[in-house]
Length: 158
Image (tube, rainbow, N blue to C red):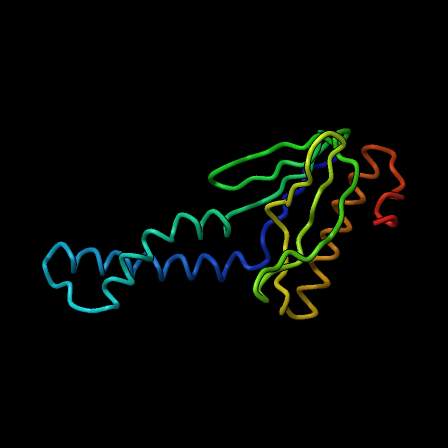
């Protein structure tokens, strides 16, 4: 089986936002060092530099699916899930305070369930993005079934 990489569908927009946060933060930091620190936007810009690593950790996440299993990767952590350790793969809504996304969750035989770093789609995304997300989720499930010989009966029981 050829390895396949899945990335967040909003990768381009998150990189644009990260670039804007970086530029704003650097400008605010330079103003602070020069002593020109004067208003709320300067304070906010310095705060953006603090938020930036967390934003990049979410935006740069990816999942690599190969013969061995699923590698869920983010800049701050990586986790490998072997095919034989996975008991089920589902698509679930992960939300809080009306914000959230549909994400892929894997259930393991001997551990708690885990969310994959990618792909995911926002609750208010377009039909085109929903279709692409479900196509990617179905591809991951099909690869799991092919690797383990599982029929996916556990999915219908949830």
